[in-house]
Amino acid sequence: MRMIFIGPPGAGKGTQAARLVERFKIPHISTGDMFRAAVKAGTALGQQADEHMKGGRLVPDELTIAMLLERVAEPDARDGFMLDGFPRTVPQAEALDAALGKAGLKLDVVLVLEVPDDLIVERIVGRRSDPDTGRIYHLTFDPPPADIVDRLVHRKDDTEEACRTRLATYHGQTAPIIPFYEAQGLVRKVNGVGSADDVTARISAATLTALSARRQG
Image 1 (cartoon, helix red, strand yellow):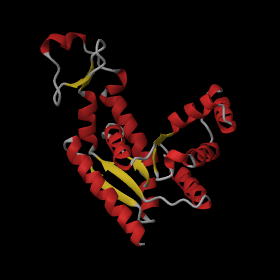
Image 2: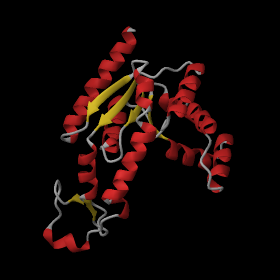
Image 3: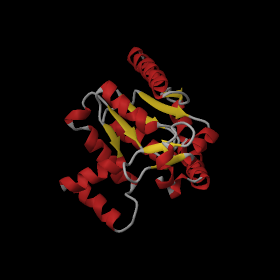
Image 4: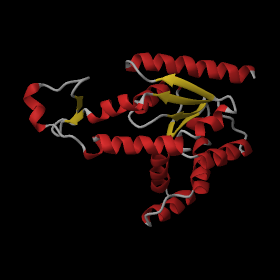
């Protein structure tokens, strides 16, 4: 199962990604984790990426894609992989598509987790973290005990303004890659509203349907 997982910030993608990789026994590949692992291992590509990061520069797309191809060639990705956080733009999607094609690899599905912006804002703005235990509560959906409310912390990036800025970036830069993959018949949109178990069930059904369609095609 080779997939790309897309969704707006705060949609619950992290929770669902962890369940998906367990379900399909495939590695979860995020560019950040990949960069850190390659730098730690001292690979040639990792050293190049490290130079850019130390200089405060973004890692070029060509280098990122080369590292992705190197990563998906590792044994744990033999049966597939989940890409998370890349591609983020249409040019990145086009470049990745070309590179995978040259490597003889085809995507099975591009999962798009959909949650309305207003609900995402409500989810994020209501979050509070307990500095003593590290647990995250929600004032509406998972209220904290009354005796610890005063010590809870509202993170600066959990404000409505910050949240809507991140959502605007997602809609302006990342969401446009969806039509690119729709043209290839790869996109499966999943309703991300509801319990985590309900969303997992929808994602599993959509993913299996996509895989079956690809095999028949």
